[in-house]
Image (cartoon, rainbow, N blue to C red; front, side, top):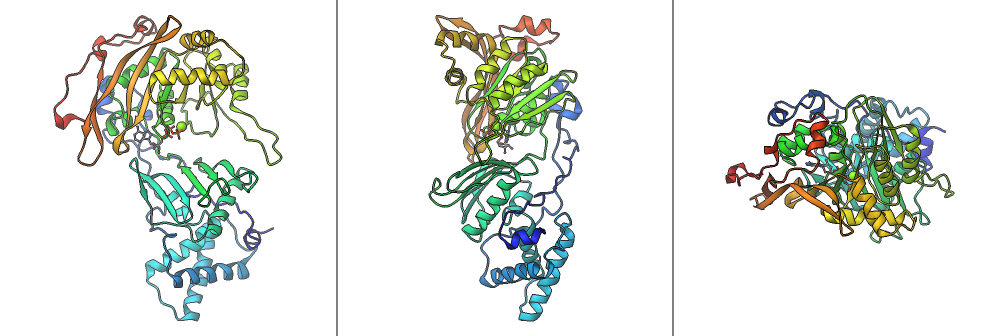
Length: 495
Ligand SMILES: Nc1ncnc2c1ncn2[C@@H]1O[C@H](COP(=O)(O)OP(=O)(O)OP(=O)(O)O)[C@@H](O)[C@H]1O
Ligand SMILES: [Mg+2]
């Protein structure tokens, strides 16, 4: 069956890659490593940089409120395309399809004596093209490199996140029907279906963007769609330190040593606080010759090491069979002789398998966990271990955690959308049945800037890590002044 036949029948059509699936750009960020490089020797290729904008990025929203004439023209041109060119359309030849649409648009304008500015005409053609080959109005948002998250609350309300802040977009779906078609295209890509009986679905776009769909009757206002766009721009430690000021050079230097010296690290944080991003950055410090296995629910990690196996869990198929939960991945990967295991996020019983792996010779493993501070992170880890259903006494669980986890890095999304490492805490053992930690670094927030963004500075707590000797014995030359408290900087130096 031809592509347009399927459109005709209103079935799902695999979309063309939303923004093109070209390789990520590898240009270097000018001056990126300057401050941070003085405290570290991160290889230049790890200080990645802004990607060149994808071709066709500079275009206006095509799904915004359409005038009746514009909407009518769209419908006509779209159905003419199906009528005349069904079966001739090659979805891999976007330019060719666009040409055909343009031809039909010109014909429509002649026959209706309708006039349109050149810009509007382009918009119209792009809009039909997006409906036919892509994800309709979402295409413009996916193509806009400054947008990191797309949140459609219902067909007529789409929020986007730009520079860390959610804003209402002018783009909307034309109707609930159009939104459902787009959703169907997305979920069919991963061989799934959403309907009343299975109203929730996680999927991934071709370019790696993570998608969550919830439809009625669960979503009361109409279908809801959330897309975490795949970051085409690969950030390195220098971006986190110099560009976003999420970490001080001292903290990054320390974390780099901890990764290289094979400490087990948990990145803790709230939703969208930047946990996965930080885990990616930390993994860039792992030496090239190690065998790494990543286990994730939605593959987001992008390791640079060559000896890397990437595993992704699978939801059940439409018959409810074939599920491969992340827990099984963690168990399996132990039989694959990894040097380190990286679990994208601990959300359930896999926490126990990961802790056991950490305690049985897979030092240097890492994961993320949803919690608001290091203490809560440990409590939550305990709860997750209980979900493994092994009926372990709480003392045994704490001992396992206390022995397995060495460091907790707390990431937060603060006022105004800025992301900061707000605490680095070392797990130092167990006392009276409680896991003991000591804070090595913190972010002191002093206020909020005129633009509404949190401002402050990072400082050491004046405490040396308990594992200083270990770090040194692993060849990590860490100066003690790294941990010294910093005097409050002048207001112009705050961030
Ligand atoms: N240090 C940072 N500075 C600025 N923006 C950041 C930073 N880290 C991450 N982001 C942005 O924040 C968004 C969320 O990042 P990320 O996916 O790493 O968060 P997360 O905590 O793993 O989210 P989730 O809880 O949904 O898994 C992304 O769009 C990313 O571009
Ligand atoms: Mg994440």
